[in-house]
Amino acid sequence: EVQLVESGGGLVQPGGTLKLQCATSGFSFSKYAMSWVRQAPGKGLEWVSGVYDGADSTKYTDSVKGRFIISRESNTNTVSLQMNNLKFEDTAVYYCNGRSPTKLYDYWGQGTQVTVSS
Image (cartoon, rainbow, N blue to C red; front, top):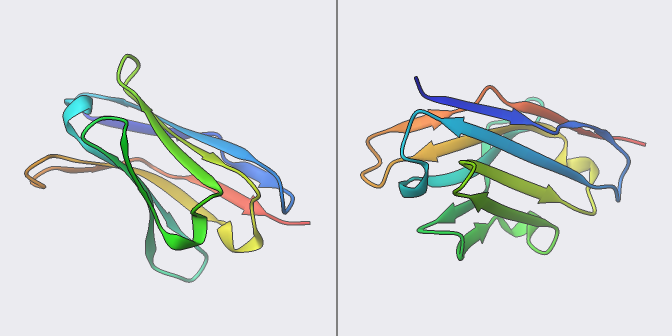
């Protein structure tokens, strides 16, 4: 059974930090591209960051560059998102996504809420 379980969301003030984690099982984690995708209230899905072909290849959407850091741990099949200097506009449900090299398989977690508010 494929599982992706996010944790680490919560309420934080602007300028604060949170670290999201996604624990996975049931698929070949090391072969999959892992991403974080978010959905703000009333908006569509927005890709945030991805890590590919090992831990050295990472990408970010422009709005989070320099603030967020994605990482993956193959020994624990976990992908993390360190979020620093959070802004109001980072408020969203954050989803963990795993995609197979052929893009045939696409797995999602249940999401974790991040709220940035003063």
